[in-house]
Amino acid sequence: MKNLQNLMTIAQAAEYIGVTPLTLRNWDKAGKFQAVRNPLNGYRMYDKEELDKFLSLLQKGEQNG
Image 1 (cartoon, rainbow, N blue to C red):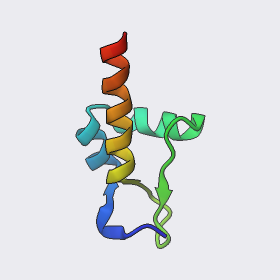
Image 2: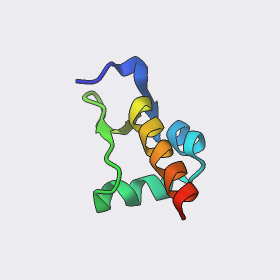
Image 3: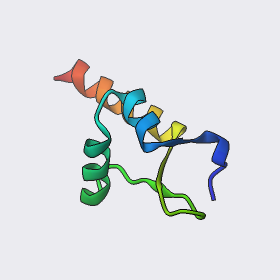
């Protein structure tokens, strides 16, 4: 299990990467960017390290595009 201190709520993660929470939910359902589920309530949580990797890939794609 990931360290809960490194996890963000869906609202926090959406704001962090500049998309809506609905976009994150859709990406999770499509398997593009998966959430970690909180073991206590089942809510989607996002690992900051994974968000940073995702942002890095997006930035590299923009530079190459």
